[in-house]
Image (tube, rainbow, N blue to C red; front, side, top):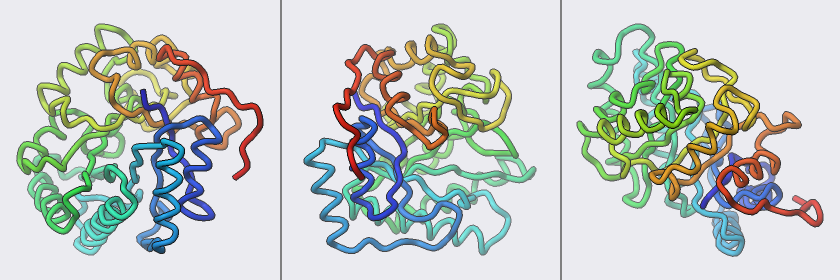
Length: 291
């Protein structure tokens, strides 16, 4: 089973693999550039080779890129829309370059215009991005918590986009905290089953390529994006035991985006909690790896 985390590429993209090993992650998510800016980073060939080699040697796969936070395919601002499309297309090319699976991103907010109103623009933009992207890179829609008129809090919104476009490279990442905040009670056996049945009906489980494993600081249906360490939130250890043990999710990579017990991001403690709840042996560390 793949249990990993979002890790930093500071100091070089290959350092992400070192950081993954330091916390016991066997799959990763990274930013290819600073997430608060439109500026894109270009990786030199030697950096890419180092990353690919380390990833293979350490068996840290798959890798996912997370799109920048500024992306909004529902924006009414033409300049921002073009920048959003260009940023995602750039990340798709980087995905292919480094051998990653795809780019996970938030669709954005309709700012009160309504989902149906912005749907044609979103479909046109995603089609354009896929047309200008390599065939071996997936574009991955992430569900939202529903805050600020965010798109994708209900699975049917994601499914409608996917069915309208019909490209096999268009996939989905489900965030556990966003799902819970959006009203899917995945912390109970019945609620999890209902959520997955709805997802399979409206999207298709074959489109699910990643899970963001985050506990929730927000109660069920709270509609706010606030992550918590595993077991310290409203989903809780019992909820994650159900999620990790569900037959439909055993082969899907789990990626932590939690604050960390030392407030420094995903850590080996959160990794080992997930491993324990999944019935896996903990990752042991005889000495702290150097990065």
